[in-house]
Image 1 (cartoon, rainbow, N blue to C red):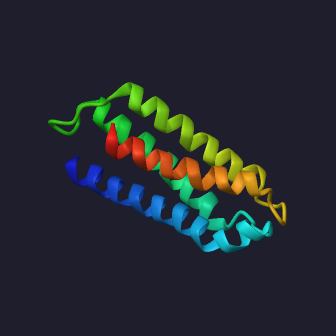
Image 2: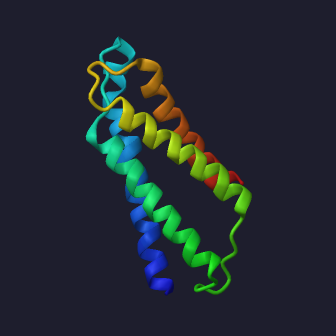
Image 3: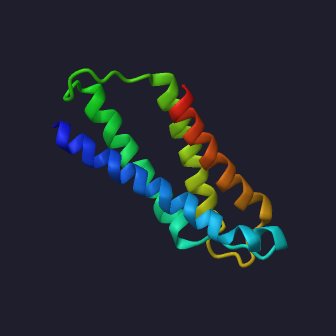
Length: 119
């Protein structure tokens, strides 16, 4: 099961790169007020949600030795990830998307990385 967990962690990082990379590609347009929600933001957020939930399930079931779940951390990260996904979903067809929504997507994604690393 450790191999499955490793694959899920890699996919989780790919989702992060897809989400944050899509935001960074749009940042020049966001500053000008012409930004839009790119497909990568939506797909990256969804990939992070799916792989994150799967990882918590695997670790909570103690299928990988030595891995413990910090439920408070998981709750914060899940809440932030859901907000990011909902923002991307709601504003995906608005061109231009509100700048505040795009800044929120990028900022909350970065906040989720900080929570993952620093907590």
